[in-house]
Image (cartoon, rainbow, N blue to C red):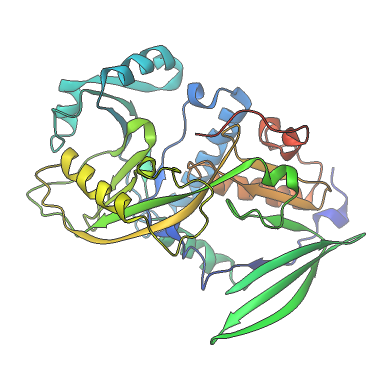
Length: 371
């Protein structure tokens, strides 16, 4: 049992570099709620944790389904080449993974708009959906703003570890002016995904930041209809959501066009022009009758780890916590990770977080490589 002192609610300050919550690329993206299968995660404890994360997120979404544009669409990983299907046959356990294998006829029947010459099969995930992340997070903000203080347009320049607390040296940006200062806290939680400036070396060395790029179309016409499922192509390197309410298509990926695959690129104020061109070209190949017109495009920074798992838990002290590097699949996990980190901040003995996600797995050095 926690001591009474531990159970007291903590005062919370969120330091955010942008002008408001969910102002980055993720807020504008389509919002895949697409949890990974047991075969993909390869760890039962991790899979069960993901299931818990998805369950509490869905419970929260139920209260604001219309506001955040929730749609229970299911999702399909679409194959263009036979070797993709051969790999899936060896990889997935249909009975335990809860997936269906579709052939070319099955794809065309269920996604009538798709170019059937390109789509020769697919894996269908039933328990998936889509929502508008920015609208969801704004709802959370409105719920929390009277209890939590937010400091916007503020960057953390460095973190100083003291005997019993932490000092954050910060710069606030306002009206083209810069104001520096310091904040002190007894408990610090790093929630920076790919930004590793103030993290220990063994964490920095384990994270591979990369820039993703997205285009969004103008609303498609009613004759084209709505693409009924969220989609992924090229083993997940391209992904698509057709927003059910405003009829815009969100299509992202294609970073393989860049020689570096956009790895170790952390500037999201710029875009790779060839990637934008390829995204449009590829989208038109998949859906030639959509009369695609691009409304805008953007980029955002994501993070892989060398073992393709997020980093969640306590760092070098019980009062320094971390939840970063969601490896391109943060939608199903990040809400639940936030809850678990909150519990850990109040009770350092909490055991909710799977051991395979804990930071200390990298203390002995890193092996392998991220996707």
